Length: 150
Image 1 (tube, rainbow, N blue to C red):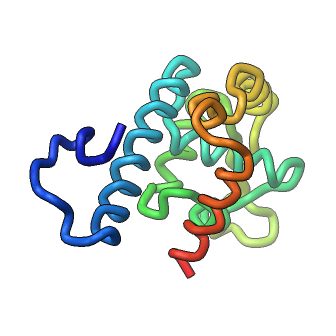
Image 2 (cartoon, one colour):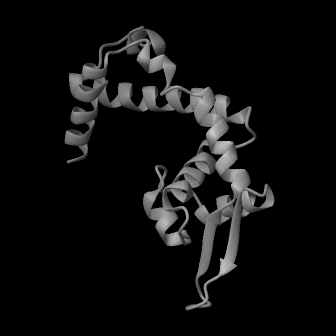
């Protein structure tokens, strides 16, 4: 469906660049909602999923809040708050850093690793995209988005 129809716009966009900006924002939000709904069945949010994936990538090493914040997709997320929620669910551990007591070491637990594995088993690279575009088209879009960000 065209973006004009999705947002029920009657007037033309100012330019193709304006249309592109609106389309990227709308599509990003649309994909986020789909992803959030999928993750809700596992009891976590997209931001919590992002932190768990970062920690899995660090595993068996620990991470700290700064590393997590630097690698998060949503830079405005509060990584400390997210880590605390994940800790309450038993998905991560926080320990005082032995070398610097001002820092906290954060690691994913076995329960967290198991949860990510079960999510991986049920998701297959965003089926919705695989059904809509080819791998070559996905590469082209990735290249163009990278180019926009410079």
